[in-house]
Length: 271
Image (cartoon, rainbow, N blue to C red; front, side):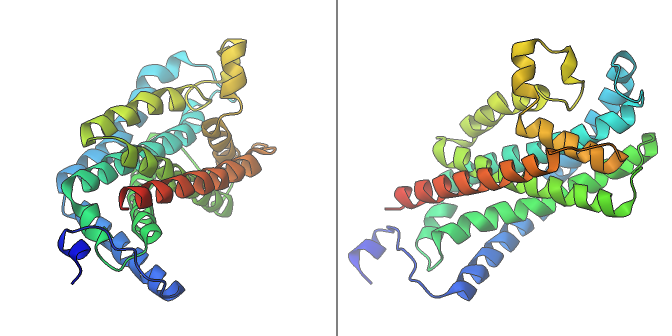
């Protein structure tokens, strides 16, 4: 054993082929899933949050907000879907990565023959399961309060797939923030600082037509708005224009940019 290994320094994994890379990513994704399942209180709070938001906006604000078509449930639920997926993908990933970094888990993984990128892909992939469960809960609550998939099953499934892909893309942003913050508390604060304005300055909860012109310019073209509008069109059978293409473009751009930045940051910290 070399002196470097004895000091616990990182060892870059040798190149062993695509199958080895996928195996590492899968094992780490399963490790993160098991960690989530062994924390029932976290799961319970994560499931309560979307229920709270659905009921709060429907019964507290719904009567005061005029929306196209007049049915606030059909207008609201796509926005809640996107918001909750973002909270889970970004906020949960940011804190989780920061906790692993400060708790020594990442140092241990660095000393093992695992690809740096596979470590991070395993983390982001495991967040998809969390989002699936959260979306399932929101669908059940939405159906109870009157929300319906008015455009049929296949468009609804397409909308949900688009939603999960966008959530996966945003989870890479969460990884990068988690790698760059100094502690889980700082990661939590960093996530909340930008996540709330990002979700609320959009078409998620009210039409953007009521916003000042300078603010509406951003809101109409934000990734949050394009995703929400795409889901509304697919769920309700209304025209979507280029919203689906814009959402896919935003998602691919976010994955490419923040996956590259995150892998570079993780590798530099292990050198």
